[in-house]
Image (cartoon, rainbow, N blue to C red; front, side, top):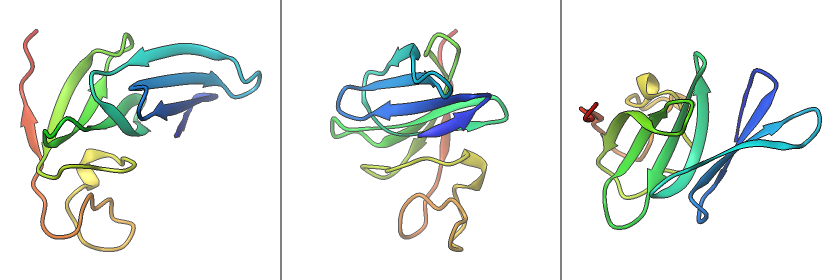
Length: 114
């Protein structure tokens, strides 16, 4: 779950959805879909990111456009990520540093077709 600009963004793991909820009314104002399990969501500098996992592929961190289309994908060499944090903090080992999994990790940017 993430908070941004008066809205809660709630990931629905097995439903592969992300819901934008008006924090004042509790109304779901938008629902985005994913092709993989949604294991975490976060908002960074006005951008929505979600952790994606499942289907025996490496986990990913995805920056989404307003329509839910991935605009940037970071491949993470682990099977599952639970929760997500800004990708810029995803490599150190100190507690609270944003480390994604035990041991060293490498994040690789993937180019998406236009």
